[in-house]
Image 1: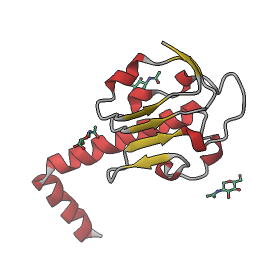
Image 2: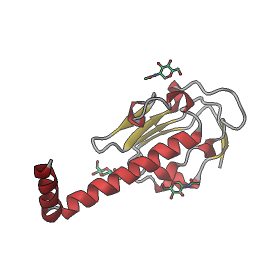
Image 3: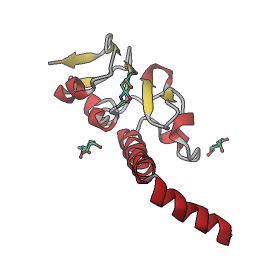
Length: 131
Ligand SMILES: *[C@@H]1O[C@H](CO)[C@@H](O)[C@H](O)[C@H]1NC(C)=O
Ligand SMILES: *[C@@H]1O[C@H](CO)[C@@H](O)[C@H](O)[C@H]1NC(C)=O
Ligand SMILES: *[C@@H]1O[C@H](CO)[C@@H](O)[C@H](O)[C@H]1NC(C)=O
């Protein structure tokens, strides 16, 4: 135990940037998790602690969400749950693929989608969206 604490101290002295990266990426991951929970679309997966293991979610090696595939979800047809605004897109800086095809979503396509610089695949077809 003492040895571990000592090693950790050495590590913090030698590689503060590594520690900073670890802390930064875990807070991004927590924001991603909160955004997924907030959407209400993954309500059936709360007992699986790692959101990277939820249906339709893929993460990179840093645990940041890279793909969201809503088409595999079974969302109840409630008006509140069907709003595209439920998902806070800006919370996913690493997002590459976003597929919300045929989810029967309503609302305005969020402007924030343009802040996702790595997004290359976007499918919002077969929904009731405008904007
Ligand atoms: C999560 O909970 C549901 C029922 O509440 C259960 O059927 C399912 O097996 C659980 N999943 C895990 C991974 O524990
Ligand atoms: C959306 O996520 C971003 C980044 O995590 C955060 O700054 C912002 O407050 C969130 N917006 C809402 C409405 O939760
Ligand atoms: C965006 O993609 C590039 C190239 O794959 C990668 O190096 C970078 O880390 C990605 N950005 C984020 C925020 O994940």
